[in-house]
Image (cartoon, rainbow, N blue to C red):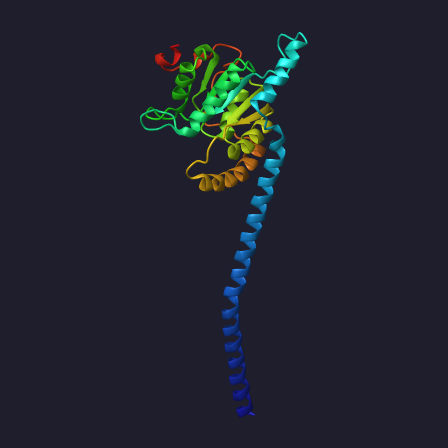
Length: 266
């Protein structure tokens, strides 16, 4: 009897040892399956949100010619202020070089925005960008360039705290009291810009300004895919932007947004 008990004990220990070895072998496989499942879930979620943002915004991307035609048709019917005329053209900021000159991407945005203004589609411009430091200033560079191209200073408003697409739209609505906008940026960015505008209750259309393939486009588009997911969540929560401030109606004089004397020179 004693010998039988010893044998059973040994066999039990061996079975336990074998079970432990199998569990040790299976554990990494289970973890890998969980890891892969999380990756696939994340990828499909990202793709789904990106598709939704594009679908919700794509139909509102238009051309300058189409906008002008709509405004001209209404003016021909005797309307002094056509219903299709928007409050302002909103040019979203982009990189400014260390010497203060415009990057190619930003220059193309501004050229398109200025063309919209000169076509008589709207009589106000909002330059929204990053001016969070004394040594980096997108908006004054943008306004100065527009003035050089013949746009009156008083028609140009500067949003010094447009630190993100979401914040630019939030401030356009709350600070500048814009109800309708024509947004100017590159196509890869336009879907998110229009999505943010709609979330803020702004009736917006977009005019893209892609005239070339930019260096770093692949990385920029990949980053934009992640940004769409982020903004889809932000527009639900609607947090306040970094800065708000006093109301500055876009129907007024843009020079009230000047912080440098040179910005008002024509």
